[in-house]
Image (cartoon, rainbow, N blue to C red):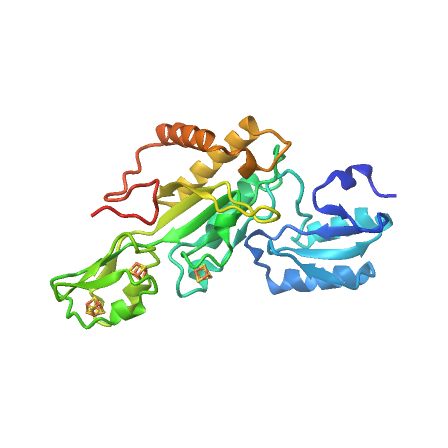
Length: 301
Ligand code: SF4
Ligand code: SF4
Ligand code: SF4
């Protein structure tokens, strides 16, 4: 019989028949080397597991696992570098898109950030489930704003007015129609600009420069029965700032949130504003010129 403590782990999930278990793995950012991937297949075969499942949170589950094999199976998975995951009131698998390593649209290294957040917070016991997701641009491939904590990479374009030929290629590329013609000249309509930075690549003359990447942090999103979009919490200037703010958010959740409802249901406007102001005061001023950090997509001229 397996060690009873194993059943308390978040990655050991009872199946419908109440006799078998689903074993969910920890795979930060959903990235897995081919050796580890092959290792999972070898381990599964060794224990007679015939089916795996790919989850929406970028992990793998081994299905229909008998209790008698739990001890040894989990030890083998640990050795393979794919240990048991989490799914209870904990910080669960941190998800990320491919980011600057692979995706041409990426403006931040979402994988590096995901790994840092995973290392610091994965599996922490919390009063509520805490999901963290990161997308390296506003395309939002990880649906990050539907997570308790979401991070989106942003980039602000800066067109060189003096050199611009007015060819209009960048205008054509902007999906938000944020580049408009006014008095015969192109102008960026700041309110419509999503800060995706795609227009930067559209200019063959490279007359559109860009500022350093920014990190939009959202709080209180969720999927499930009552989906909610997370509210803009802050715009950070660096990966380390995001790590610092995430730490404060996770600490605050652990101290201030009850366990009877999900976080978004408990996060009233007053609480959100009060907590946000408290965090803002405790941070060194990040001062992003021309930007209201409460509204990511609204830049002041
Ligand atoms: S969110 Fe953006 S950067 Fe990330 S994979 Fe999607 S398109 Fe690429
Ligand atoms: S950054 Fe994106 S939304 Fe803004 S103007 Fe360029 S293409 Fe349009
Ligand atoms: S693509 Fe370049 S040159 Fe053409 S309008 Fe845009 S910024 Fe100007």
